[in-house]
Length: 256
Image 1 (cartoon, rainbow, N blue to C red):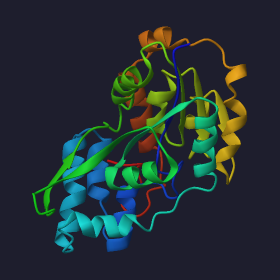
Image 2 (image 1 turned 30 degrees about the vertical axis):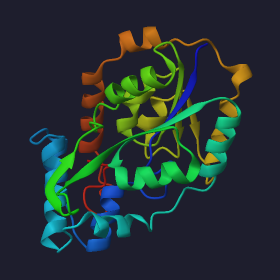
Image 3 (image 1 turned 90 degrees about the vertical axis):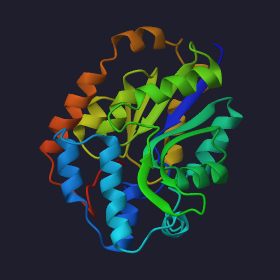
Image 4 (image 1 turned 30 degrees about the horizontal axis):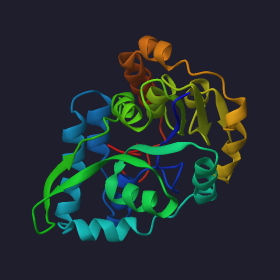
């Protein structure tokens, strides 16, 4: 085994709250229901979804990245997050954040707890930090698998053993190509059904019982990658979201 990696969703797993984008909306009193509907029905893509979010912030006078950072500085770590990452490091695992949320928050959290690599979306700015109105797409919301695969190959090699931890339907794309997948406080049944294990707990460190090096089976990622169907993930997600009425603070998604 050349390496062991644990990939974490950020919003709702490493930090409190369902979405860093929604955290900004909530602070500003904005609501992107129109963008939510357009994205979940396939009428706009990730780039347009992010632009629709940012446009609402600009309308409220939030035009500088420092203003967004000030809001996200209030987002708190999930109980047990720092302990979990520290113990995984002691056990020889590498860790990576794979999030459709904002890199402003992901970079802070990564530095605080000691994450090895970070993949998250960003806000495009001019040289002086003012927002251009566009986002920086690194993690497509409905295809976390693609950036994760690149990160894993760089971190530990293509034959690395992989676990993933998430709480929403978009994390199923990671689950499909992981040797072990953990639904942590899943938002609904479809997430649990797509995972190897389900953990309901106020403390993230309760996932550690499933991440003991001595009990890990050999990696099956080559076969899992071959069998994974991103289009199926997208369809499951869209059908799932269309049937939900749990939209909160804007679009209620884990990130654009």
